Amino acid sequence: MPNIPTTSLSLAEARVDAGLLRYKRLRQWVDNALTLIFPPRCAGCGRVDTVWCARCQREIDLVPFVQKANRFDSLTAWAATGVHEAVLQNAVQALKYERALGVAEPLGQRLAHCAVDLAWAFDLIVPVPLHEERRRSRGYNQAELMAIVMGRILHVPCHPHALRRIRNTRSQVGLDQTQRLENVADAFVAQEEGLRDLRVLLVDDVFTTGATMDACARAARATGAKAVYALTVTTARA
Ligand SMILES: [Zn+2]
Image (tube, rainbow, N blue to C red):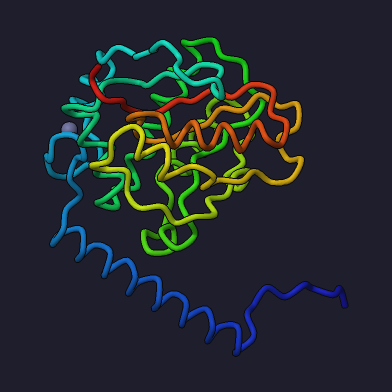
């Protein structure tokens, strides 16, 4: 008699399977209910039913990239994808403070297009890190989410842990240029030898005075990075 392979589940497997199915149905039901009660809103304009609408995408597509004179010895060059206002500002704030994680995708795409437009040559994308405590309380690092999208689009490795924030600095909001430089001085370290002879692209959401980028770039240079570019979604209007 030929040995016919059996595909039927054992009783135990069937029970696990039924349990999993019930769990999945419950999850689906809860997800649907939550979507009805809290429908997604566009992070740019607030319209209901999408995390990022086509109109806001068209609007940011028209925002010109900003490249400014470099004031920092530590940086090779820096640029932003636009000024911190209107739809771009709303998107950055929604990603950072309102857990609108889906917005990392259009913003990461925009950063990638800006990097291509600038024709910068880099080997590695490194998001500006949050201190471990802040990362834990927020649950994610918004710069890291965008850097991962960029890496995927540009086929450049993204190393979220190449830099570490060793001091939990106070927020830079409300500090002047000198206070900002002091606040973040020596706040970052690079992995030992991790960046030797590499050209690094630092990514963050907002470039204000550049104090944070400067401190990150110094840490990267200290372990041998040979070029350090800085790119952010927005910057203050000059
Ligand atoms: Zn919108």
